[in-house]
Amino acid sequence: MKAKQLRDLTQAELEVKATELRGELFGARLKKATGQLEDTSRLRKLRRDVARARTVLRERQEAGR
Image 1: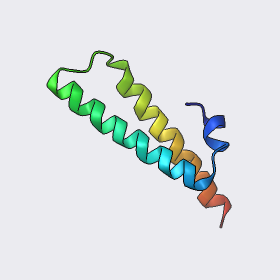
Image 2: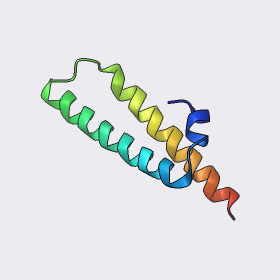
Image 3: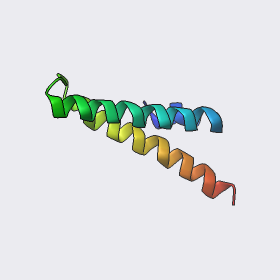
Image 4: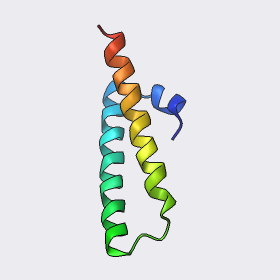
């Protein structure tokens, strides 16, 4: 997911999206540990998506000060 797409979301939607992405990342890590994850590049993509979402949340928090 691109940062621009994340910036277009409302604050509540963005918080939900960040939570969903963290859940997906957790599930992917479990699958990797058990050998069920076929696309290992998915971990990197999810990790970066979580970072993007948290960055946009942080930007909004700083702008609100």
